[in-house]
Image (cartoon, rainbow, N blue to C red; front, side):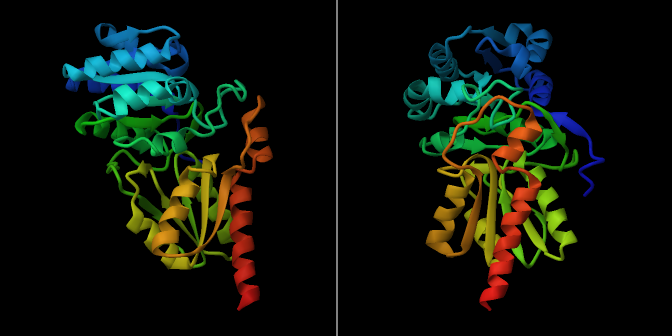
Length: 320
């Protein structure tokens, strides 16, 4: 898998374009935008499907309530705004009018994680997965690339109930080909290995695969498991991945508290106790800076993942 030469796509571009195509197939799709269409690229949908686009303004709580009402009369409303606003600013409305009645509302959280075009800590979502994982009835998904997102959007239309789909801003390499089919609740083994397991989610999986290549150059064989669905979680795949090597590193562009790392620790603590290291945001907010500098400062680069894995492998060797 040559990530350097692979096609690069921005998930926000795929969202606007592919959802426009799906709206021809699923006539009940609507997009409700929180005055961010030119950033989330819901403007692509608005141009192609003007009769199915509702501009709601900077009023996220009202946006959620309107979407809930539309869902009760048979529409499939997709909410388009930043993850930081959808999950935190409208949290009470998500809980009471979407999650509790289990309505068919699809919340797309754009500009998730740390790479948000220098918007800074107010716009970076550090805890969105943790919040949404805790919401009963909510399906929580973080696709790795454009092709997986296409399949996720289709699956969201085909499955009833509330979904949270975490989207990123900037172009990233493609992992999956066009034949790939996302299955809700299923993790994907991307690489077999025997020395250490890397479990990742979202676009951080690209960096996990790059870390596996670094480790291979050091003679370390890494097993890589991609977890696109944070809830429901593929517990058996996580147990199998841990059992394959006996060491686990989780990697995510999210807080290590309550996100993928927390979820994996919960599963392994109950079903297969395993030595772990968690790569992610460490109880901090971010700041405004270029992408490469942010990834470096907050320890999210492939090198950071590889170093954590290498330390665990070395420590095991010393303890034998």
